[in-house]
Image 1 (cartoon, rainbow, N blue to C red):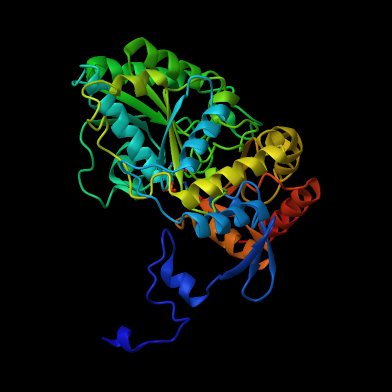
Image 2 (cartoon, rainbow, N blue to C red):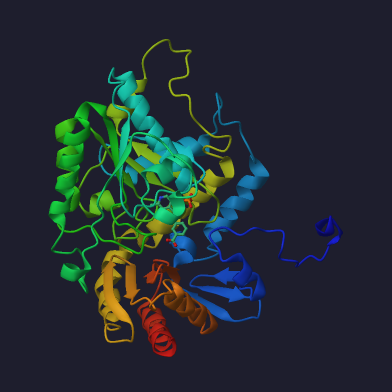
Length: 442
Ligand code: PXG
């Protein structure tokens, strides 16, 4: 009852915030009220340098005119069109534009509203594909320890971040996990792809032998694991996964929700690492984070397998009210234009050597036990405070924010992924601020 009487507009109690220390936040809120290009504006008027592209999504920087105008225009022209048994031109145009930038062979696109939904969609496509091909015994899904595939039931089942799984019952059955590839003893302070650990991919062969290939539908991995604190694939690792999947008729899904749309210096990690999966999940950078939207790419082999039976029949019983939503489609088209006009799909490759050098210059800062990087991604792993895991990195996050820099932390790892428009001067500023932060925390 007491809540109903409370009409104070800025009361913070009603909103149960996602993945947030709610009580800590509400005692000392961090409110953002504006954004432009590389910066947020905080409610106290301070400019905050965005070291994380929001949550790995604002790849072209904030409030880009082309995108905001496209959204406004579309909202006034066709606000919504039913997604089932009806179409509108921009969703088809967008699918074609996406296929053009995707790895060769990724010829069809399903639309979703988030990375989590892209993952569920991909897992369902994989299961149904085997079924329509007459291989209905292939029902197992294989993920990886420390993997993040969103927060829905399929995603947390194949995912391997324990805190995201352990509260939620039995999850999907028939799921197994490969070991992660984090080998700090051998690979600490590696620049780019680690030398050691490629052979961890052969653990998949062991899992396939255990369950028998005829029971396995798909393997899902993040080419670069993001949420867990940035794990870069060791040399040879992804190719080996591909070989094992091909050998056993298992579909390989790359979850590119973070790596998609230019983060590594190519449109997709599949191109960057020259390894072709069967399905790619994306979201985030698709619309520059501005409007929720995801896209799942599949090969013609997969798509065509469904195109059988009577033509009036629905071929795949799956989809969302907002699949290919007109405003999201308009935002995505304007985002792709912006990426193209500004060369943002290759900008991470151009900046990466400078980024790497500046990032690794923090090696001698207090508490730092590993630094790793690829494209415009960086991670700094801190020695946890004894008996108080996560506290050190969280205090770095708070201090950085006070000092005008937004970083992300997961466990005791700081993750960095700035908008791809960042300048060299801003890279210098980011690492100067971070150096001060690391020197200033306990
Ligand atoms: N797959 C991957 C690989 C992701 O990184 C999702 C799926 C889920 O996307 P949605 O749109 O449902 O949130 C993600 C999301 C972080 C961070 O700081 C990472 C994500 C989301 C929020 C924060 O590491 N990844």
